[in-house]
Image (cartoon, rainbow, N blue to C red; front, side):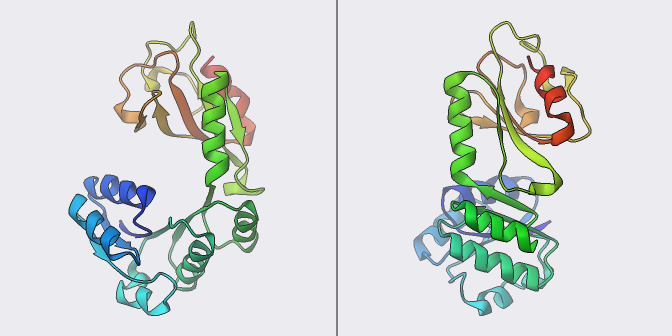
Length: 219
């Protein structure tokens, strides 16, 4: 896929590196010349020191031929603008990170983004789950991806899934997308995890009607 990442901060740089390693063609935009240069040094990407609020920037990177746009700057208004531009050019998939839930609601209501990630809610849920050792369900936006929720569940000591591979756990495959596994220090791709251990946290997108079945599978 040809993926445009707007913002070369920690999230944007990490995505650029991981996605380029998987063979995707990555283009990164950041108005900070130093950040743009650093991400190009760390990953096999095309990087541009450009202002994401300048419409001509998108012509320069040929946005009409982009498959996915990820708006990941630290300014909600810039991410909103980028999403609007992407949708105007007919980009098939638009993913936006925001901090203000009101911006998330606007994006959802006008239907210009496939996924809207409300950063404080996601981080807050993960930390809460680690502290309390239980699952949390986070509603990112009211109509997030047609009734899906971001779910986090921590593997408890004595859980039936301790020592199992993720593929061995009998959770509902339809309506569930496991995004990552957090081992207390690092986030891992689900395919990288050899055996589940107590304290590991599963992070997944789960359809409303199978949330309870999903949670029960990891208890």
